[in-house]
Length: 117
Length: 111
Image (tube, rainbow over all chains, first blue to last red; front, side):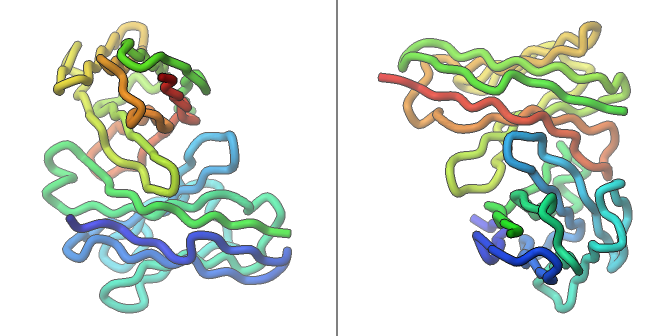
């Protein structure tokens, strides 16, 4: 069964460093998302991406964040200068047109745990 | 703004029914979902309900929606140890939009 994959599963970085979190969405999907969950808190929406551009972003998604689809398979989230409060689990999700027009499912990856020291 | 609240922990004995509750504030919520997360895995869609429905049953799962009170519940009948996971309630107001999630309810099933 097709699934969304994310690498790495755990990333440890120093404050101020840049990190890139990688996701491979399901191959025929067109809509891509990043969410994050700070430990013990809610899963929060960061950004959605369609047709090679951001379609919606939250207040969390400031100038330190960027997303890219560098090739036909990867979808990346870059944090330019990490802060302690960026420590969280980051989930990638994708949807195809069929899922969005029926019951609106987004398929989620297993997450990348980011720890900023 | 929109908010989704759920209790953080539920302990249940194997074979009993589990009921996980969720409340939401966005009256324009059109789609409501339950996702399950097992350790090391992603969020897996368990079931969903449209806002024009009151109830949906899917094998051992029953979803009840009280739109007036903005209350959603998930009942798992005959809970098994494999049901131990974190369960997330989520809502969406339009097809293309983002999910609004709760913090997740950790369900622990004891023998």
